[in-house]
Image (cartoon, rainbow, N blue to C red; front, side, top):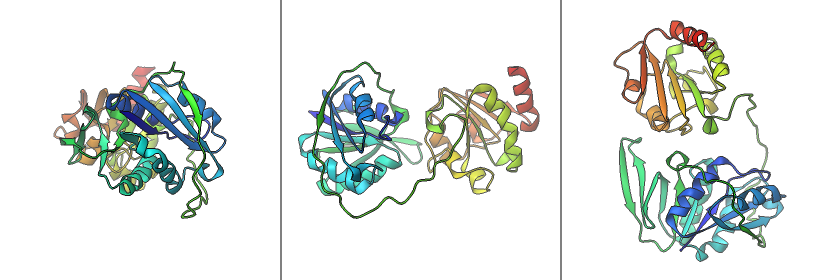
Length: 309
C-alpha cells in the first residue's frame, strides 16, 4: 500500500499542516508520496523531499496551480489517485476544499478530521464537537482522508526522497484567482504558535483586549479569541479558536474571560497545558484546565505580567 499526501504550501515552503499529515500517512501505509502542485514551486518540492518518511515527491509545476485553486489541484490528484490506497490532505481550508471533490469523483466516502490511525482501514475522529470519538472503518478501495494536525506529531526532517516531475492536467476553467488579503502580524501564526493567549466575551470590549497584549508580548505568544468575542466585534475573525474557527494544540494555552462553550473547547482542549482565568468557578473551561484561577481578570492579568518580569 502507498499513500499520497496532497501538500499544502505557498510555492516557497511547506505549511506545517503537511508535516502532520505525512505522519498520519505513514501510519496508513508503508510508503508515502507527496504531491506538490504549484507554480515555480521548486523550493516547496525540495522541502517535501527532506521530510522523513517520504519516499517520493511528485511535482507538477504549472501556472494554473499558482494559487492552489481546488478544482485544478483536485483534478491533478485524481489523475494519479488510482495508484494509491490512501489519499490524504490536512483538515485545513485548503484540504477541505480539495478532498471532497476527489472523494466524489472516486465515488468513495471521505473520512474527515482523523486524529488516530488504528489500522490501514480503521480511523478515529471526533464527533459531537469532540465530546465523543467515532471509530470508522472503510471498505473503499481508496481511502480519502483529511487529517486534524493536532492529532499527530509533525514529521521530522532529514529525508532524501526522489523528486519526479509530472505533466499538469489542463486548467479546469471553473474558477479564477482574483485576490488574496493577508492578515499581517508580528506575532506567531495562530495554528503554529507554541503559546496562545486567548480572550473571551468576559473582556467586555475591543479596547479591553489590549490588556492581553503585554502578556502575549512577554510570552512571545499568538493571540486568539472565543467565537463570542469575535461575534461581538472585539477582534478579527482570524483570531477565532474553536470548532468553527481554528483548531490549535499549543504547548501552553491561556484562556482569559472565556467560559468554555463546547465549540471553543473542541478547538483547544488538546493543548498540552491549559491555564484558565474566570470569575465564575462553575465555568466549563475549568473542566479542561490544568491550572485554574477564579478571579477578576482585570486584576489577575496585570499581576501575571508583573510576575513574569
